[in-house]
Image (cartoon, helix red, strand yellow):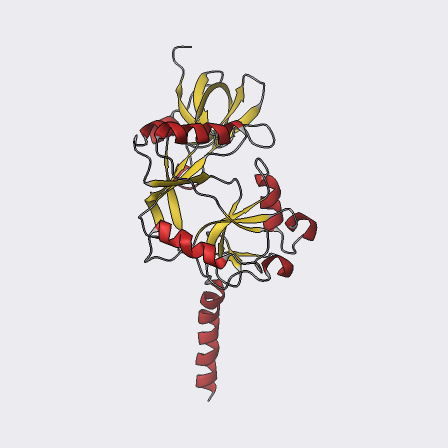
Length: 283
């Protein structure tokens, strides 16, 4: 009997962490990135929508999960009368309000005043055996009179010319939107990175002066991990991506000028997602 109890306790010790560590990770479709100039002239195969600057949220039919499978503690009143079928969308407040929605979503105890500002912008119905245009038709059936008005299906538009789509893109960016999303109309829903879902964001090139270094971690231990730079506005910020191993081993000198790309300006006035391009040797 004592041997049985010992084995049972050992089993609990080794099995329990695995049970509690496991979490359901949504098998969501991830967008590939392109720039506007590389898209085909014929754009009639794309369903185009604004790219909402929010937090990706997968509705399982009973709760919200992040892409990584973490539970989002939405208030009960927020999710009451939501469809029992899975949905894929974005928790969003307004353009250039990402920091606000991110803070609200991360709280263990939901702040009801914050959640009253949030909308769930639904862009897909994750049914793997249907084309995108078919999924959109089914999604319309899920939105009924009893569905909360903060559950909003995203509007998709088919543009017959690239010029019309470019005009829409420029309108979104001018209004401080993040960019646009393109769904291939006859493509099925597949988990992982896909060329059937494309995000198009503006790319801005600027220069900055190198002011410091941040050491690398993990595989970059002993190398440069990030550059601290100052732009022509006097703003100091960090650039942590876009470097080759060669550049990380021998980073740009302090005081040198580098070029970087970014996708717009964040709420705090700094470049969003800055990425190293090259050293301006001509300067």
